[in-house]
Length: 503
Image (cartoon, rainbow, N blue to C red; front, side, top):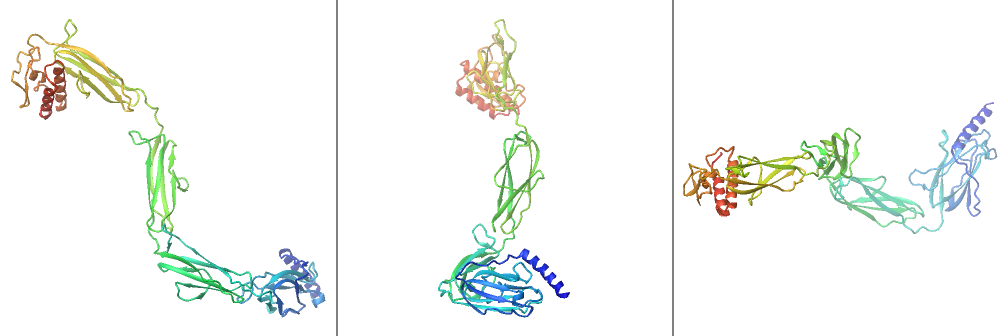
């Protein structure tokens, strides 16, 4: 009864393992040597096993059946070791056999053996003493050395140097007898067995050499990798945000704002730059961003260097508003002349010219006028013209969008007030302003008023600039009337500018 239960349990276990492990199938290679292992009810040793073999293609037969003496249904495995030092690891074999499996306990696999030693054993619990060695010889003499390479990894700065440490990984392969040993040395110190990647942390320039030997004694040429290790970086990068675009008088961006994020790092170098807009997810920054969504925005930025240091966050707050319709219409400008007029329509004594400009788009920026042949002058208040004679005032205006109205003009004539318009005339020989003698003759303008009378330094002026503009207007009219030369007019205007009248 016990035997029956044992057989059923063994069969169940074998069925489970066979569902996981591939079943070896017979090989059709006629020229392959055949090596046979057998087992029975004993769990301390294989019943039979080969001790030696020739290198090359080999048929492995593993039989654990009633024919080999297994009467209880006891399962066994034939497993080749692929990790123990000192053995070949190039054959992967793991056969589970039982008299009750689908092959009735006889299994077959084809492998390729290389010169050296193989270790085999049974993996089932309690069967740990079932172990042995297979020595493989021949297969042709191996005269080819292993191939060995080295690779350096680690965090690198902008100059390509490794920050803090560099790790050297050595890889060796041999298609003949197989790799036996791998060795390395740092900076020509001494050769050491290579078992795992080597970390080099000393600051400075280094060279790591490496070599490998196969099981036939062939030694590879010495390979080498060179690199520099620099001190670790503990300083984070710095970032900045720059905003550009057209802005209104309130500083708001018209239509869109362009955000440019920059990052610098003098240590290991910048690794990545990220931004976050309006509380969204952090996103990798690659190129300037155009933000055209209307409304207020908050932009954050940060950066990390190759040593893992992360910068403090920077932020910028801005608002985007709709771009106004482009203003292409110049201002509307008009001018009017006022004053007492005689029957002929001439202005008696003084004509006052008032210029008015309006703009419904961007707004009026500047208004200018020009009296007769004088220069263009900024218009700030009505212009009084008292020099007798025919005059023309030209005027124009420009809006904040740069549109300039076409030049217009208003002609008029100023007539004297009688034979003596200035009964208390200032009859000094020269034009004197605020005590300064211009050395220009104080001539009669033609209606009983001298130049000093027309300048009227004792008049009421809102400020000094208004007085100077008044003098410019008077002298321009006298030049037009032929009473002054342009040089004399210039001397009078300069004296007015130096004076304290109107201050």
